[in-house]
Length: 384
Ligand SMILES: Cc1ncc(COP(=O)(O)O)c(C=O)c1O
Image 1: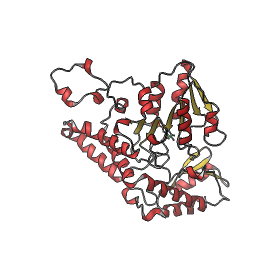
Image 2: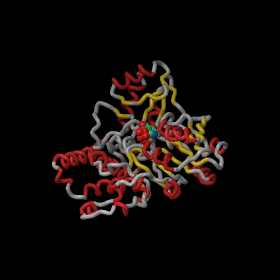
Image 3: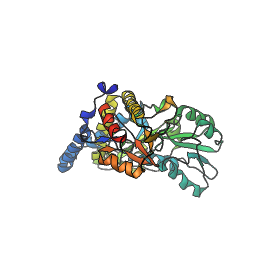
Image 4: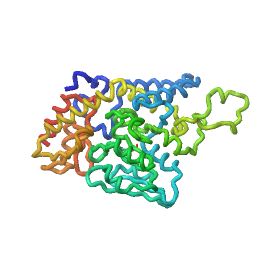
């Protein structure tokens, strides 16, 4: 068991009487990130700490570096965001799609992957909402629908409603050959499963800070590969991305000369020095990075295996987790003896926090959970 390697529980302040098995909804904030917020609160209470330009540069800079390291990417490829929807809208709106252009999405995907494109139907863009035969689309299902008019394929990497993982390499390759951008929503994967987007034929990767990175709500990231950097235009010229405090201190400033940065920072969400959120995310994502996503993934899979082995099959029907070479640590279980409402209420009352999605219980352990947590959870799960 990997717990000897990974004793993270002490880095968090989770209540000892509960077991949080719901990282797919929210990752808890580690103590180091809470301390970072405290420091930011002090800055704001005593704003002389913010009167130097450093905080405005240092905080977004620190966050961008940690996120780049997590993805093994360059800092110039990372834009700071407040959600995954932020990047998905930015790309959907920034590709200049015209009448007759096509986009492929999965009909059963999380709404954030579908809605930004559906808006474009009013402009004549054809949005193909494909129904997968299984839980997620296969490369063959996309190959059957992709055409020279397809400008983008947008999918969730780890499917929120089944935990299944799409075949990024095969789909990325197909998109590349067809000339479509491959846009991937990593909200349920980044921080929990290793990913190097540049090495996987991905053009765009979006993610959130508040699930497997354990940061605050209202944080996210956007990674752009070279094709997306060329194709996604920006309609923003944000002063904080384009100017320095020294520029502002000058007697005269020629605004006509100001240009957006040539890097992904030109797509940053406004408010990049957003002290409370971004300082905290830099700390929590830093903890994930220092722990190692490879180790976290192995640890989480081992905990999920314990659940698979331990859950009483007469009480729950476990859902298939997809091909073994591509599995997430998210497990879905359908209650057989009582209603989902009853089971959910009893679990919560007994201190086991899970999500209810599509008629099932969703169990999502992460690196702060231990084997002991899983034993405690199983003892409750097998009697509700
Ligand atoms: C796949 C996926 N995308 C996005 C989100 C969150 O949406 P957003 O960050 O766009 O607000 C979730 C879950 O909350 C999700 O599971």
